[in-house]
Image (cartoon, rainbow, N blue to C red; front, side, top):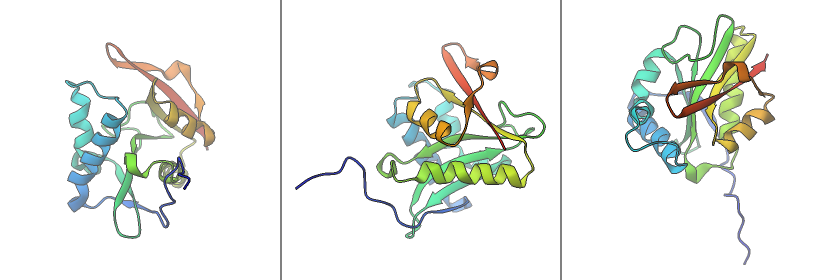
Length: 173
């Protein structure tokens, strides 16, 4: 018997706005995805931010990827300039943050679907480009962004706190 290194396809994936009853689960999914990749320090205040899906939903477009049974597979936060979650975007741009796919549902196209939805939303808002930040060690995320035409934008790299370097990417629309 041979085993595949990739999980089986998910089937139909629906991208939609998160529902209030899902906020706790979305927060846990986001936290778990980042923690599973070793991206959080034990004392990181960012962990609390990742868990607070309700706050994101109240200030941005909190999106989820769900399968046919309604299971949450992943999430992303889409925002425009002026949002408390906008870190890089300026007038005419859009941004997305906290892209997370449950580890057991990775390599099934969930992240790609969430990125595509963010690009489509940005276009509907008539944004001229989309920007994002990623940690230096998030190599699989960077490959995903590059597949969608995002390019490194070194002049926007930044450090939210000492020892945390964020790389910037941008994609024109």
